[in-house]
Image (cartoon, rainbow, N blue to C red; front, side, top):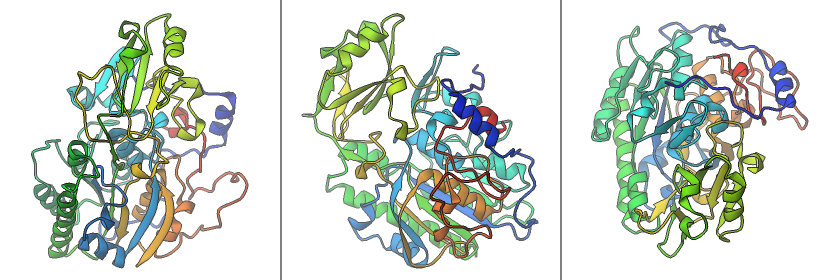
Length: 451
């Protein structure tokens, strides 16, 4: 069993930031007006895994257009590194970079406890992998609200002693329509039982993007099918009388890049596989050298291939926010866009993949939203996915925990500005008021998160 870990490599400067952070406990009273059972705002967050930002313009998507006409669209969303499913879905509901919330990859190894995590094994249900952060469904429940989750990564794990009030155990064979009907039922329950915050997940178009590649013309029908599924959700909300009551955010965890069998990097050409352990998969590969072999393995990989960058952990660019956690391996390999890292060509190969640098356009997800909290027919140029968390907390009228996002960055999406709204400062922010989340560029420490 794993323990809740404090990220290593924390500098004295970070401890100074920790002192400056506001003390926010999970029992902090609501900073907005008190909401009883009758009038607490409602919010549904929907993720179509791997839905790239430009898919909505590729084929007719009338249901996405309906949301945009009645709500908002963000053209450029910078998600978190690495651009994989589990790290980004947890960032959305915590507002934290992966180095802080601890879900640093789909496949992880924790050397402090000698345990491994994989999204394909029961290890993902060990709650202590998840407890370096607090997801939004736990926070709202501790604030007196209710939550429901339909297959969202991590939502069927007991985190800090809690499951969502209503949730579905993950089962990929359960149809999107059934997931929708279940979550609409939870929103439609009696006032005492109805959920206030819901999360809904669907595996496509990610699965098809991997198998076909995003440039395949066969993807057109997959994208059109996603739009139809969105239309089904909107129809069910309307039939339940929730269309004008539930704020709906539709987004994704990442985009998708086209691969080619001509663009493969074989590590066996450069380093003896007996010298290291392979952790996680292409295009960002964690390398755990055998004891005493770090420098040898790194020297072998440093300039091995012009289409691959090798970093020692401490040299990973700060802009990626991907250094300060024991689950990040001592050596990180990153392929250039469109390239695949394999040990040799005997492994399986996909025509599409994600995980690359989060500033690449191909890695960016879609973002549209509508509802009483949002403006109508409004297009915003850019945001960060970590900004989604303080935005959702504001809509739900709950106090956010310390996070890497900023409500100031996304307040223009709202139909009415927050009472504390001020222009984004040109200099480092002054200590925050009680009703503001602290805007961080540095990693947050465990003591900052008040777990």
